[in-house]
Length: 163
Image (cartoon, rainbow, N blue to C red; front, side):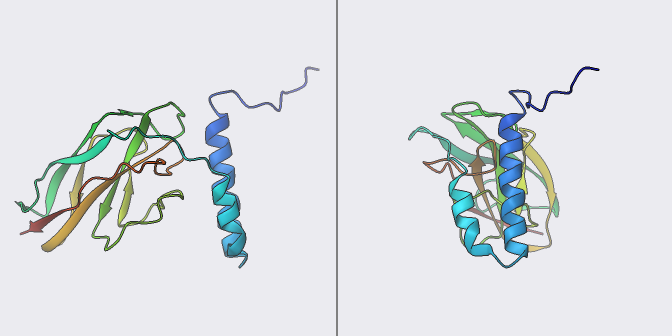
């Protein structure tokens, strides 16, 4: 009877490695051993981004008034878009920060929260719904493991008003 191979297919390895590291970090945190998490996070390698790379929000524009349901279009120059799990030089995928007062740590995987939306499929736009009032939007490009690059590619924040 043929024996099943335990080796991972080459394109699965980066995804598996990143997922394993993230799961270990979460388990350590849940067990109250969070002090070990930074060492584990350090094992996740940052990807390189060219100095000229820029992320930006195409629309809406800073200061725009928008309806409660609207489209956000993402822009990127100097790099390409690749889905999460695909380790390819000079690429990444977008993360939309909504109403964050400060940037999350840029040397760790970006968490998926109500305020940090992941676009790991390589999407370049999204439809979002926000309550009436003033809101901030900002983009951060993450690598194949959702970690920002060594030279973080972060858009300027913009402010919109939802009516």
